[in-house]
Length: 216
Image (cartoon, rainbow, N blue to C red; front, side, top):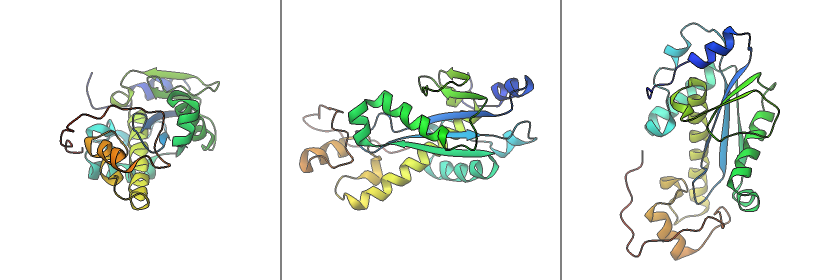
């Protein structure tokens, strides 16, 4: 498997008469704070040079922050439609992370002009809707539609956590985006939880926290 996604799956569906093919992915499922975010992207069918226009778009975790931001702008320009869905930390604590992620997925799909005829999604991200769905292991490394959704979910959630950094100073949200780095764990031990922390996400802080690794 190459780490560069392509449109093979999309073209297979388009060529079989499927008109609206959407890619879906999430960001923030494993964080200790902040929402989980789901993006849905519908790329235009059979558009020449579409892949070259989005050259370099891949699993968002493999991209630098500046590359993700540039890619997000391109994706929003070329996509037929795109949308975001969110589930809050409170909803995650109440429902559990899997159910809350499905809720965010359903909210994202509800924001589209019309439901897709087929949904390509990363493995395990299955909204409870009657849709034709293909769930792919490492889908953001196989389908360009899913990779585009990965980028939009990541950049949108990162921007929101940067906004929250000024509301809750001392936690470093702009740096770690709510994930369980040593810096974040130390801040929780020192200052306690904020309203955006997931109280059900227990963690065992190390006795001597290691330095934070460099962010991607």
